Length: 273
Image 1 (cartoon, helix red, strand yellow):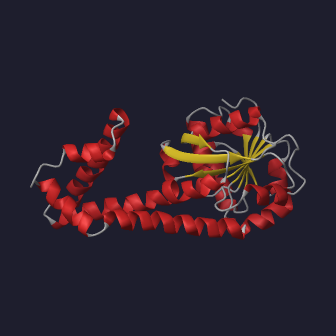
Image 2: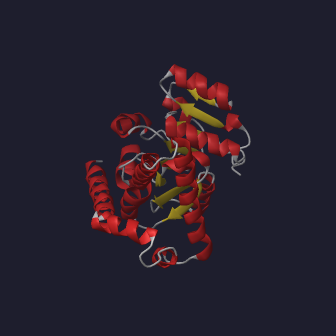
Image 3: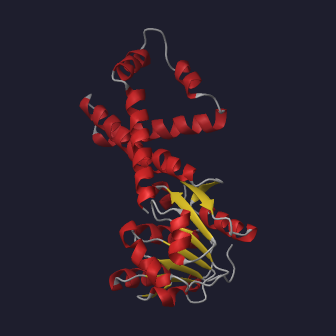
């Protein structure tokens, strides 16, 4: 629990709201008034105040006043302007946590003129507390600040620290973009179920439970996916016939290329920051 620590959110959009929601739902923050959101849209401010009981302001400088933790949750295209406003204004002992895609630690530290910065890469399932967040800290982040980072990110799901932020680009391609790849696969499975005669509701239920059960089986058995695949693949059987079509369609290569292309794009965006 983050007791008596003031947290400033710079940006009250979708991801900022998700983090606020999870911090309060898990009682990581037990007093919503410890959270203040800097958000230019009055409608968003009103929404956040009514739904979560947090404080809001249209002025980012007012939001960070006295804050022990500052969470940057703005769109990449406005980051430079936001950092220019906040530069030299954040308390020297404060921790800055960024969820801005593609913004490197050096660019954040320089743009804010602040030493203690953590860069994170959360994925979409953080919305339901089952997300995956990979993070990396600048050299000036203290052990206490690292612990605070873990407490915040654990409210979102699993967190993984890495010494090199280069791994965040990899995590973006596999874990963040990967959710989009999985949703496309799920959509295709549901459509295939409808094509063979199931209702869309039936196809969706069967697909989701099949995937969820398969994932849970791997978690519990720790067996290699090839081992589990072989268990369900009988010679000349139904699964073997379907797998043949997947291999003929180069499924493995398509997936690998999707991840590699996403990784390359992430590196391009990081180099632009």
